[in-house]
Image (tube, rainbow, N blue to C red; front, side, top):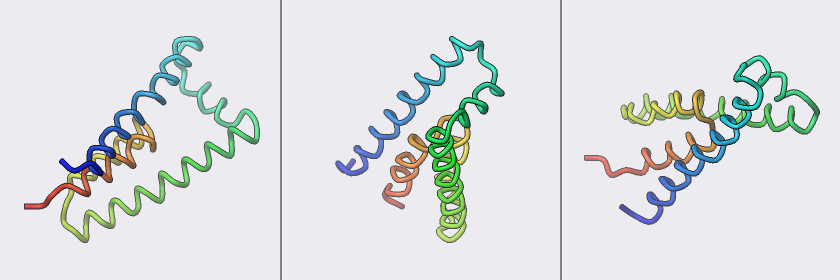
Length: 105
């Protein structure tokens, strides 16, 4: 495995652990309601800007992943769509780069 692919994999793992640790901590304190999480995302302009930034970037990456998978007929990277929803962009994007850069048979 090349250093570049290894760095993508490490970033995907860190991109999963760090945000999920914060989310699980938040759920432990608040009791775990998603409505409260969505309210917190738009608590003030700074947080709302970050939330919109992540939603727009996630949408752009999702469209690109679907298009690229259809063109290349390589559907494995589409698992990153689920990763965007359930983990986040910070894990899904490096994971997509890791899967996309693998050697093809």
